Amino acid sequence: MTRTVHLSSPDVGPLEEAYLIAALRSGWVAPAGPDLEAFEREIASRVGTRGAVAVSSGTAALHLALLGVGVGPGDVVLVPTLTFVATANAVRYTGARPAFVDCDPRTGNVNVPLVAELLRRLRARGERVGAVVPVDMFGSCADYTALLPLCAEAGVPVVEDAAEALGATHHGRAAGSFGRAGVLSFNGNKIMTTSGGGMLVSDDLPLLARARHLATQAREPTLHYEHRETGYNYRLSNLLAALGRAQLVRLDGMIGRRRQLRDRYAKLFAPVPGVELVGAEDGASNCWLTVIRVRPDRAGWRAAELAAHLREQDIETRPVWNPMHRQPAYADSESLLTGAADDLFAEGLTLPSGSALTERQIAAVLGAIDDFLTVRTGGSSA
Ligand SMILES: *Cc1c(COP(=O)(O)O)cnc(C)c1O
Picture 1 (cartoon, rainbow, N blue to C red):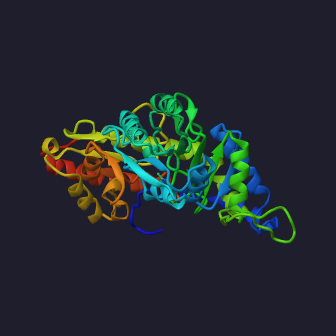
Picture 2 (picture 1 turned 45 degrees about the vertical axis):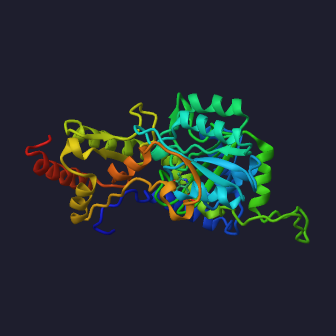
């Protein structure tokens, strides 16, 4: 173990070890196997969808989801500008092009009235909109109460990028279940991990069957390797699925630890002027990452200064996602902006949030923040 306190490290222990060794000893090392099927069933049951397809990454799941709802060359797909690049890249893989929409400044989730406005503009120009891809930012669901009727009325399918949000809910319904298809990630930094992996979830069984086919090189069910179209090698292995099953057993406990940590950050920052937590405070988030926003005019200091102070103590922080409309790779893309994502990028800070942090590490982080605040606000913040 290194001295550095990381943002969101994998949280694995004896249970993961036992599941992984059992899978290894079962002989199911060649990619497919019973843990893979069980993992798909268990995730579908957790999310509340009729089925699931386990794949090698969340990005692969996004690609298959977009293909599954019929996105293809010439289409435009609406994507939040505040997201990880995978959301936009997957759109490009299909030959479609992304158009970016700004976020709600309070939650970082997509600004729904702007989605409506951009849909109107694109359709007025005669563009075919292939999908809308809301992202459940930092583990809080987008505003599906407003978004879903809008997309239904426009006849545009929704692909939910719930890569960060497994275990979150919106009005009691699970993240991942809101679109025609939903996407989860089990990358090493996510709420639970298979070291690398993802899942496509949906109620649409033909969509899932087709995704499974495409994910296995579009191989026809013959002995002699027949392929009628171009597929991908996107399957998750049975061994990694076993790791995922152990993580899923522990998911609620891991979410609970992240929530406790967020509550402690909230308490620490509550009396500090100019600092607010990003995201709805409705208890429905999976608390994947705790993000603060620092308004320098009111706080008297900048998020980057706190980041520098913490870095000196070997405590990792990060800015929020650098918005897609600022990325050189997407410089030619259309966007509808208010400046909210730019502000969050400039003033946001992602704090260590992992469920594997020890009490000692947490105390070190909270202590270091408190020291900083004491100096900057001229008195103890506690
Ligand atoms: C992590 C992430 C992905 C990609 O998942 P991978 O498993 O790393 O491919 C996609 N979208 C968002 C919003 C993410 O945070």
